[in-house]
Image (cartoon, rainbow, N blue to C red; front, side, top):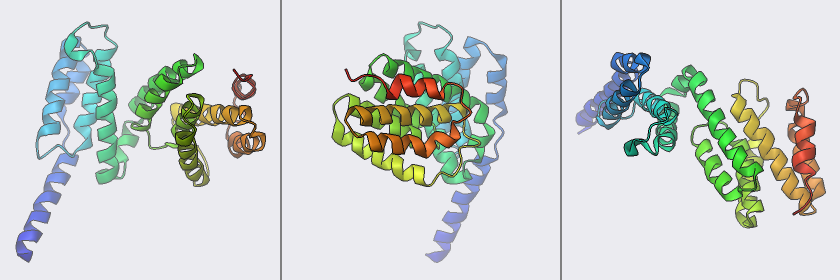
Length: 251
């Protein structure tokens, strides 16, 4: 029995290692072709890899699948089969990052930091546009999706807490803020964070501080801002955003 377990473990390890060292040249070529049809083929081929036992835990196909879906989402297509391409790209990128952290210590996510950072930024801007227009419930749903494609979730937790508070769900808001506070304690620097992760932290803290201030928890608001201000001292719009968000009059 022990021999069978050892053999099974070896085979499983071999499958994982082989999957992680694949080059997926077919996916690379399809993406490089740069046409709408090639992106559709890329999506179909990458998805096949995510369903095969030998490669379904390899993060690489999920990243390529997300890339193809993202390209389709900005192509202007009216194809009903891809009406949710952007949201599907978020889903598959999130799975890729999850598997990468579990099996590769996040090395492939670092390798793909340019794509991940760019995609994060589009999602942050979508969420922030909703929130700045007062759409806190819709904003929350986008921030929740953002958290799936980021390894730095503190800012997202602060922003989700602010959204919940502004939407009237104070119990959930406190829970998100509690998780965010705990995560913030472990952060010594945000150097190396993506632009979107930095923005998420900045706006998350400011919107949270604004909510606290308008609920007459001024000391808590000041303390929260003070915990992150050293990272944004050279940020040109920090003061303006503080006035715009934190000092916003209560509705």
